[in-house]
Amino acid sequence: MAAAALLALLAVPLLLLLLLFGGARRLRRARSRPGGSRALPRGVRALVVTAHPDDESMFFAPALLGLRRAGAAPAVLCCSAGNYYNQGEIRKKELEQSCCVLGIPASDVTVIDHRDLPDNPAVEWDTHLLATIVLEHVESKNINLVVTFDAGGVSGHANHSSLYSAVRYLHSEGKLPEGCRVLVLESVNLLRKYISFLDVPISCLLPRDALFILTEEETEQAKRAMWCHRSQLLWFRRLYVLFSRYMVVNSLHLLEQDVAHNSRRKE
Image (cartoon, rainbow, N blue to C red; front, top):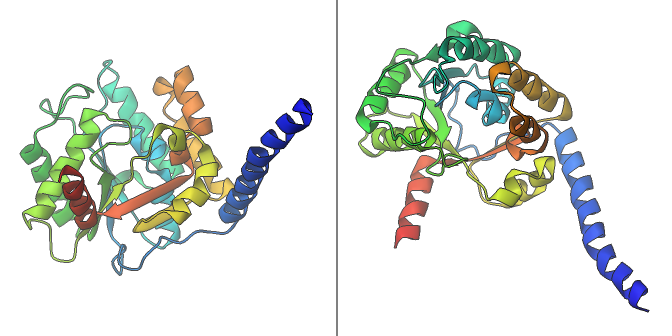
C-alpha cells in the first residue's frame, strides 16, 4: 500500500512535467512573434545595448534573432571590451565572430573601450557618461527601439544594471528621439533561469510586452554564437548554455511599465 501511494504521489508531478515538456516543444516548433503591437514600432531600427562581449549571445540571442526574423536589422552597442582578465582584444574579436553567426555584420557592432567603464562586477558605471554614449548611437543610427537589461541585470552584475539606469535616465528625462521605445530584458528567479525551454509556456502565460522564442534550429545558432567566446567557456558557462532559458526565450517589458512596476514595489 505504501509503495502504491508513493507511486501515485510521484505520478502527478511527472505527468505535469510531461505536459509542460510537450507544450514547450510545440510552442518552439511554431515560429513565435514578438508579443504586443505596442512593443515594436513600425520599421524597427533596433539597438541592443550590452555590457560585455558575450552578453549578446548569452542573454540577448532570442531578441536579436527574433528581431531579424521580423525584418529588422539590429545593431549591437557593447559598452566595454570585457577586459577584467586583460583579454579585451581577444574578446572584441570573439564578439565580432559571435555577431556574424547571429547575422549581424561587423559594421553594426560597436565596442566602447573607455577607462571609466571598466569590466568589473563591483563597479557601477557613471549614468551620465553611459547615457551620452547611448544617445549618440541612437541619434546617429536613427534608432527607434533600444533593448537592454532591466534593473536586475539578469545576473545582478553591476555593469548590467548600470545600463538600465542610463537608459531609464534618457527615457525619464525625455532625451530619446520622439517615438523611440525601450524594451528591457526580464530578470527571472533562479529556478526559471535554469529550466531551458521548459520556461517557454511559463513566459507565454505571464505578462510581457514582447516575447521572442527560438526554434530548435535557432537555438543551435545561438549556441554556435556563444561558442565563439572561447576565452569565456569555463565549465559553468558550458552548463549555462545547456540549461539557461535565455538561450531559448527572451521576455521583455516596455520601460514605462517597468518603471511603474518598480515604483509600486517601493511603495
